[in-house]
Length: 336
Length: 255
Image 1 (cartoon, rainbow over the protein chains, first blue to last red):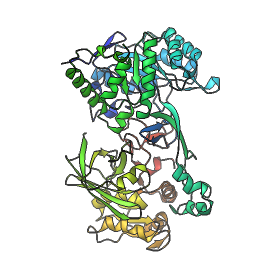
Image 2 (tube, chains in turn orange, yellow):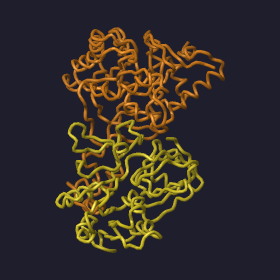
Image 3 (cartoon, helix red, strand yellow):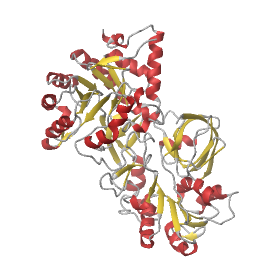
Image 4 (cartoon, rainbow over the protein chains, first blue to last red):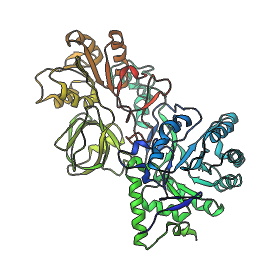
């Protein structure tokens, strides 16, 4: 029988499948369904130095065959993660990737400095899609120079391998990836979600645009006083918005991600981890063939919480059927 | 927990936009606590994510949901026919907790009745049920719920006064409180403004209350942190409806 094991950053992982950051809670939430050691490696929720509250609801929005999310990086902070959640991975002997973020260069450095090396921590994955508050809120990962300087400083301060997770919302993702690698990145994760918007047009028409019925309907649906009812009766009470913005994930992202993986994996020598709309083992194989050394599955788990075990079973069957003994023979096969 | 295949045995229009769907499962689910929910894969190519539904009833390996067609998912569900296959994950979340020595008072607003029916079945001999809706037509939802199972008359109100008390269900509760018996404990489900009014009323009288809330949800398992409600916990204000809820103590919520 074929082995799914892969070598990554000098460690052997039992398989190439990870979860996308923030799509498998703190790990323990999936355990009533399947054991966390099913994964090649677990990728943490995006962690920060201090706990982060995240955004008010609504945070998720279905759009076509995909979804938008605007969780706002809610997390318990690095300290509580290591105290409360890391022991589970020790117990299960499951390798983990620590995904982290900051809002200034210094926060990234402090995060990286605070993480002690551990045999189970195979890498730090830097989320470079955050707004930099010291640079007018510009997304960290959009400028090659900014990416270079953060990665370089993080590399100087940690002994743990560093992965740069890149946003697709750039003119040339190869240029950004090259900057990350020349700063010392040990791997590249492609891609993060793509910023998008959705408009709740039904609510908008019922509530805001129809002046004839607007006022009456503002009271009628519930019979309870609603603040600002005459103007916007059915809008979300907390955000006061009916237009939603967030990161697009799921199948609409797949062709964009696949191209990024194909382009970047041929331009750099470090391992590329593919992510974006992987729903089944057939998608996974395409990412490997495009040049990904490992893959991350995110949104698929929301649609089917058993997507990851099913992908693993599908990969094993595919390799057996095609007489492949090593997964690495698939990597980059489409462009060989 | 397993993802269980089910077959739709009934998907009936009740009134207005309200439907009842009965799903026979290939295997039994675990013990169901009133207030818990399922994540249902709606059998339509137009619906991507699963949808959360309160468990309206469960027995003999059959789960029933009562739903209102409002968005893409629920509207697609209305056209699901008998014998169609669906996937069901559940029971999920924390349900209602009962305490000795209190008289349960169930307060449902509109489709909120879907989340209280199972609790009502459990406590009806000693409980009181208040139901509020917009018009007379919606009262058939209540009849759907209470027929064949109670001799007690639930108290009903409509906003237009076409049936029962004229007003909203929190006003009805205020009027009914002197009659409900010793030490009332309120269990409520309804729209957000109803919960805010409820809080104002009950705070005054120091009456305990648990509420079942809803939010847009992606995974239903606590994986994505997408379905949060704001609470008064300053250290960690946003709690997941799917894991820490969907039932919350009213006094913990920031409404």
